[in-house]
Length: 141
Image (cartoon, rainbow, N blue to C red; front, side):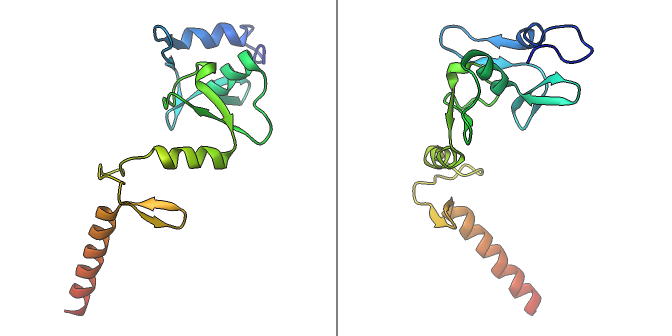
C-alpha cells in the first residue's frame, strides 16, 4: 500500500500526521475520518480501509485469513499495532460478551437473562413487558 493513484504522496506520509500518540504504552488515536468509531484511511482511488488495520499490516504483515483485529485497549480509534490482536469473529464476539458489564441504559448485567445466545438486561426486559401489557390493556378498552 504505497501511493494512491494521482496524489504522489506516499501513504505513510499521509497516514501518520493524522495520528495523535499518547505517552508511554498509551493509544495512538486516529484524528481524521471515522465510521462507527473506527478510523478510515484512503489508500487508493475509491479504496478506503480501516486505519488500525492499515497500521497493523505495515508493522506486522497481513491479518491472518479468517481473522479480524480486536482492540485490546477497547479504543476503536486506536491505530497502535500492538494494541490489536487477530482473532476469529466468534472469539471477538465472545470476548466482548464477557467484558460487557452493563446494558446500554446503564443497568447491571450481573443477573442478565440468556436470550438467543446473548445477554439481555432483566430491568429493560421487565420495562418492555410492562409497556406491552399496558398497550394491550389500552387496546381492549
